[in-house]
Image 1 (spheres, rainbow, N blue to C red):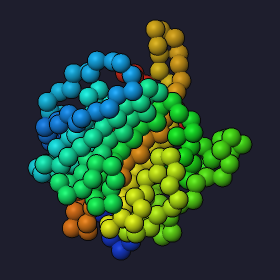
Image 2 (cartoon, rainbow, N blue to C red):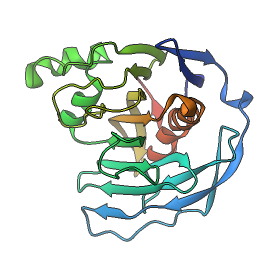
Image 3 (cartoon, rainbow, N blue to C red):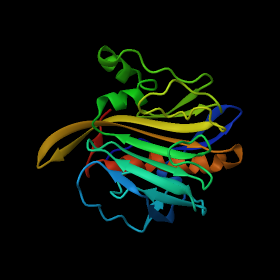
Length: 251
């Protein structure tokens, strides 16, 4: 599998996404527990074995990994959080990780969320269109203009297939499929969006695919370092968890 250099996502300072380049090899790796979340499953398939621990490219003792029953989507979060995951019949997967005071159906009170869109082109477009001009150009005839983004949003390119963004607290846009901005949030939203095409071999034959992935972290300013760890890990590891072995990112 071929990957661009990893980019460490730092905290939001002065209303801007601060990004510092670092190779994955230079990051500290820590073994943390894996918590399997209650998971709604849209297909009749047995759960996959999920290891009880995993290695993540950060060093933060108060974070653990929360996982769907399949292990296909995972997200770091503080110890003691509650979580809820879902896997659709089309492979779309999502996970919420929220503090004890939060609600697993919204991030208005704080928490983190991630989703994978491997098959639903409309879902990929809804999430990735504002950040990836090539996708906007190819799909505009089907879906129209890209969804509006919140006022005050700051976007920073992390690598060819990934962007980081910051939305001020309280900003929102009309609800839409895949909406990553909690309405009337008490805290800023830090997030990442990944969109890529890839090639792999299936039963010896060459195949291609595409996916969109998104992760957001909505926590008070005092927890910005937590958001940085959550999103760093998501960008560095989530595509590798999802893609078939031997896959190569092609665009």
